[in-house]
Length: 271
Image (cartoon, rainbow, N blue to C red):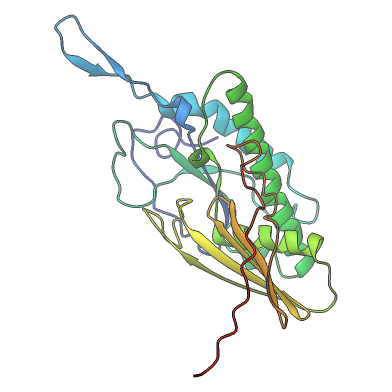
């Protein structure tokens, strides 16, 4: 699947050149928290020894399962335009070890530039639905391990490149708010932690606004495509909408999903 001497699961901790994911169709998948070593032991001489760092090796079967999901789920509309999934070791933020053990992430890039495969609303919608199916499939993998007594975290979800975040929102809008005419999509993001626009970590916060007719639908979500807010803006004002179901994992279902408070409208005049 990968070259073990450069970017495979058994690599000697060297890293390939970093990809720029600003316009790429790519997904970052990280080793779930439960495959990292747990603690260590005290040897016969009373010296503390960290557990063997075999995270990449333990993660490899899950990575192969995800790559198979990417390859098998490619929709017919995109088949032939997307490259076969080929994971590469991925880092964001400062290079080096994260905590006691090395942080293990891979990026799966199926197109280096989104405009190579998506040039119409229908194609963008298909791309978003496909990305969401990957998130749903990975969620089911994590649930399988939770049933075995493991404890996945929110941070174990997939991380999406900016174009896929945008596509997921458009796919939802096309289904939930059908309207004729031209769709206008804008997006901006704030990046926190070790991530950046070209090297997302999942901690990004994106705002995607989609105008359909006289209404603009606004999505606020993070780099894992977990929704934080959703509302509509038109001549009548701002209307809070239920959060879309983007296949989040941890709370099952998350408490407060879709709940919102109605605040009174203020009338402010001049004295």
